[in-house]
Length: 275
Image (cartoon, rainbow, N blue to C red; front, side, top):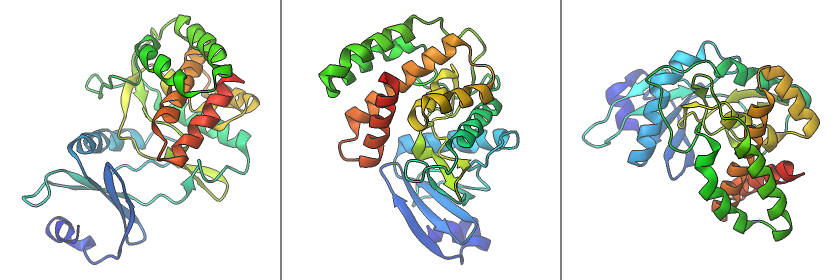
């Protein structure tokens, strides 16, 4: 990373570096006090980072919470094959590990953020084959995922799913979506929601996909606050959002045996959906 900085952003090259995460997709390093560096570790991750680079600077100014819009772009080199980013360091801990002090205020904050984000998307917005789509496209995953839950809950979950799929589909224009909004991509600082991160799955489509976060973080009463702050979720959209929360909870439950954090998010969301 030092060589990349030396060659492309020499004014940053002498700042202290601390590795924060060395995950399957990205190496993330703290760079001085103000920045992070995100370096993809595989081609798929590089494609996601390219979406952030293209679209986040365009969206950031109209969003009511900070997002990691790149402040510097890195080019591929002979030694490193992908684009990379320098982004702002956003203070806070993920909501999956640090609950907001006032969950009702947090619900209103997330509702307002999504209301601002969910504007009609550009015609060239990224398309995701699994997010923002009609719920029927997730049916196979639901049936597979239900095998991973307590048999006593399966009938209830299946009824909820069938009701969600039967709800009228989204007939408005495709809107901008975060695409992967869950408590590990929301930051809490000093007890308040402070930022939304990791827009690699940014896409367009049905707003119900993002609204599923309401079941991952909040009680029924708090979800009502989020819905009111959002202001434009009709009953069909809210029903589909519950279906998305079920679908995503089953993904987390089915694929997080080695990731206690995401397993916990899946368990909480599933319990909220079937309650």
